[in-house]
Image (cartoon, rainbow, N blue to C red; front, side, top):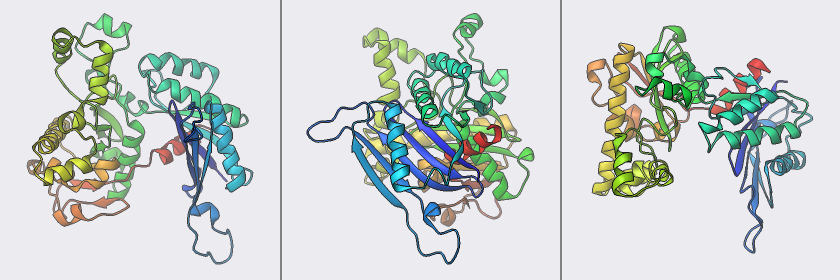
Length: 415
């Protein structure tokens, strides 16, 4: 049995999934959060939620009864990630599935930034850990937390390989003209300033799933993938390789997002520094936490934007229109970069669920052969589905992403 544990670690929490890769089924999922928070009169500090999936509860032989997921919650102080993994192991031991029966052959870790050094899933060694730490200068909010998860997980699972899967790796196929910023070359090289791109694990998974769905070889397809969640990016993919992507040095560039600005004139920052006396820390907070949909409309969730827009709120209408304007701008740019497109896919929370966003984003692409079927687009579904008409020259799809499964696949490929 090929079982892989996938870990996605943040600074004060980590998520995990245990997957049986023989069937690519999820055996258990969990979230350990509030790491480092002390207990108070109203709470225990840390919280761990562990869910045993039906795939692990169903009998292996005989008639299968109706089985549902089983969830437990553990509350206690969790001072650090190592303690968090101890709680996770306790949950497996007490509630299942048994890690003796479903022993992981490897642990896969999501790491946000691999810089220009990592272009494939990589078995974690002491040198790799040093490199991840050094790349924290490019992702100070993410890489240190990812590394903390790796260190703790290696203590919990010392006998199996640990594999780092980098968000940036899929975009290492970008050509120099796509990743180079037009600033002083020596300065850029000294500080490793270039476009790296993110959400690569999702873009890879979705483009491969889309190719399988339409029944055509990945190598012959031109695709555009919109990953639209609270963070959002779009990638142009040719023959399974990323050729352009909206996020850049950081996940801030590109599309309008829930709280991030996306593209803007760099002089905006200079103006605010000079006229509003804003520090670099102030500007960082503004662009990452007080901009995007939140900055325009006061709310960051597209569901709230949609409800307020339908009720006639002008700020919500403007936020929606700005969001769509940016989607169309990138769609047009990537149509030009690819010289046409065969498949356009929408994924992640907004991409999978917001029919109005999909419809409006595609509304002006009739010239490129895009025709959206209104009924298909409005219908909700759980799997991959087509939302274009039968006569559309471009296949337009909704493809639920599964970054954990993709990490597990890549982990197993090198472990």
